[in-house]
Image 1 (cartoon, rainbow, N blue to C red):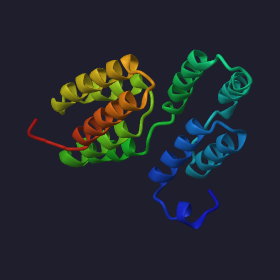
Image 2: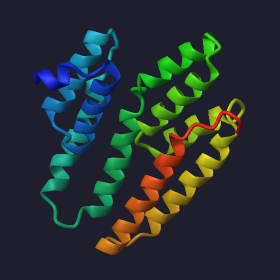
Image 3: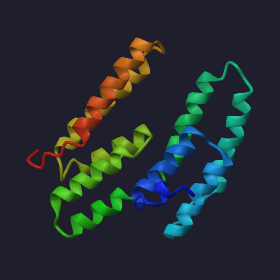
Length: 180
């Protein structure tokens, strides 16, 4: 948070970086950085509710056979992080109020791209279907991606296939087609 390059980022990008840091490296420092950001933005972030995750992470790091529990913990952490809505959704709300339909859709989809939990992604896409029918196709594409992830092996070839599928879905996500 102290680097000049971070300070130059727009607030929505700063939030995204801080959330990503916490998810990838759940530490007290990263949690405190997120809290400090929220305070500066006038948003209260309840970091106390995240602290049990830190405790569990420490516990799991001492065990060799904790992969399944680690995956469950990551899922719970992602759900917690997604309670802090990406700022793109505020931009989308404003664009919709101002009847800037394409901007509304674009900002909404950018917000979806900055979510981490399956349910949050699917919920946001489902909420867009009425205004943006392509969101139904995007939600199904994400469900397919979830299935691929859940059935994927941990070998390099499987991971490469999964990365390629995820990149294709993300590209489709951010390709706004207001005629859809």
